Image (tube, rainbow, N blue to C red):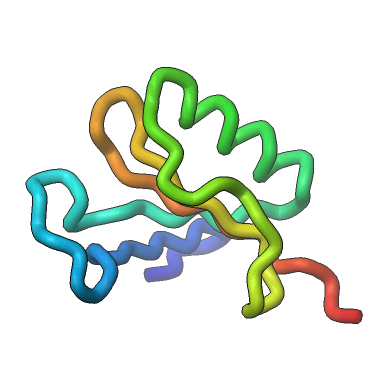
Amino acid sequence: MTKGPILLMGSDTTPGAPFTQGNNFFVCVDCEGTEEIERLFKAFGDGGTVIMELQDTFWGARFGMLTDKYGVGWMFNHELPKT
C-alpha cells in the first residue's frame, strides 16, 4: 500500500514455519540508505530478537528481520545501487 511518500508492506510467516501468535505478520521498512537501515535495525532490535542479521541479498538489497521487545515483527530493506 502506498500513500504519498509512505509505502506500507506486510508479510506472513515463511513456508513450513509453524504458526505462533506473533510470527504471522511483519512490517517492512524500506530505508533510503545504509546508514538509515543500520540505525533503525539497531534501535528496533534493542531488547528484541534478531531473526536474520542485516546482510546483502541475492535480490540486490541489504535486508534483515527482527522481533522488537514488544513482539512486533519487522523487516528492514534497502535497495542497493545496481552495479
